[in-house]
Every structure is written in structure tokens, then in C-alpha cells.
Length: 137
Image (cartoon, rainbow, N blue to C red; front, top):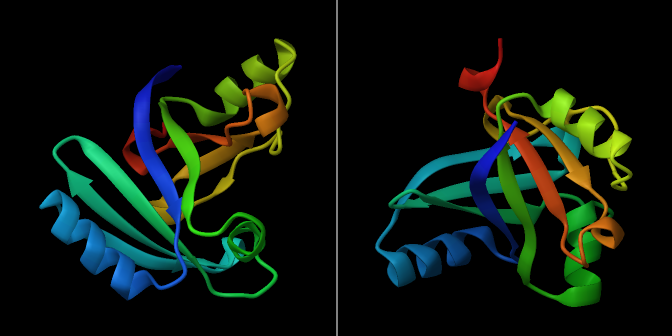
């Protein structure tokens, strides 16, 4: 079940500079940083109250984030919705005719289960479904 906004993903060219900028802008705090090898991205998470901002920097010139940056430049990459059961939500959305990038969840940052909906199905917005480790049965 989708329960609300999980985070906003922002593609950045320089992670350290972007962390510094977003901390200065928001007064938030850096709560997590990791390289997600499968996605070929380094991720930094900044919390501002209940909002999570996920900064994404490519670790490979052929990664999805690198391609995004080449065509669109830095900026909002996706909106993530919190799920209590990612695979069930992906199955339900597919059955409802929503186009998916991922029909099965994959591993994301912080051990989350993630799956992306196709922007053609969501009015041009890349939407991620996120189930955090504590949500998993």
C-alpha cells in the first residue's frame, strides 16, 4: 500500500558540493551516504524535518543518472512514494494498466526495495515505489 511521499530524488554532478548546498539551503542533516553499485550511483540523503532529499551522482558515465545529466542537466530526477509492500504495489499498478520500468522490485539505497513507474504513465514524472527495510515482512 502506498502511504505518502518517501523522498525527492535530485540528480547532481558533484555530490560533495551538492551536499554542502542542500545543507546550507535547508538546515537539514546528512543522514546517509552510500554507493549503490547495481545502480552505478552514489547517494546522499538529507533529512529536513519529515522530508528526505536524495542526491544522486553517477559513478559511471553510462549510468541512468549520467544519461539524465547529459540530456537534462542537474535537477529533480524522481518523486518517490513510500510503500509497505513494493512488489504488491507494482503488481497492482501493472494490473491497473500503469506502465512500469520495473515489474519486479530491485535493491536500492539503504537496503530498500524499489521499483520505477514509467514517466509516460505518470504525466512525465519518474515515480519510484520504495519499501524500506523495516517495512519488509
